[in-house]
Length: 256
Image 1 (cartoon, one colour):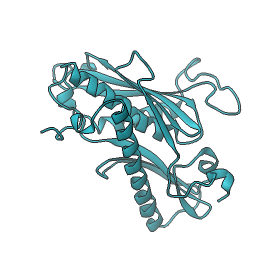
Image 2 (cartoon, helix red, strand yellow):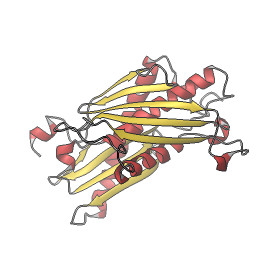
Image 3 (cartoon, rainbow, N blue to C red):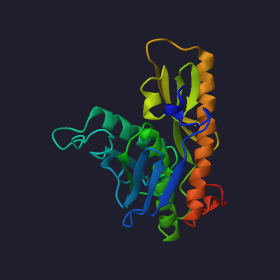
């Protein structure tokens, strides 16, 4: 693997992450999440209503939207998605993934008949935008949950666990964590893994490009991804602590 792709980063280490919580002043929770060349603004907004199919059930809902900024591409400006016609299939698929991933973190019964809308806007893209959106989205979600609890809107914590995501690939004959675009575009396998701080798996997306890979390689990729997710959960925790939010005050069961 060429140094221009990894820039000296070890194969089993994710890119450096920087978080600026509270970046969006109006949302109940927000974070500007920078993973080197990939930058995502994630916000979590709370609405005191639910979709019609949940009305009267006492349960809440979480949904997500994903959007690329027109100049997220380093080479040229792209047309804003959805400006003419329907939102692209790629954006639809990614926002559904984000919604599924973050719903796994929430006890909908404790949320009550409220909807949390997580918006992920990719400002700069260098691979891993969907995984960065999930990891950033959880931080925004946690901040919103903390605010609702502090304001007396919730009787207790609604979050089951931390959720984060990362890519792992089979590149140049080696396994590599957290692929940038240059690696992603040439990977034999590019796998996106969503998991929890407890080491549980929420979702796995992966395809071999042309040539099948041995089962052992897939198992090793999953192990590498879960190790990366554990590290990203530490990053999430540090971001919350910097914002004055203690993890044991927002996770279900931690205060009981």
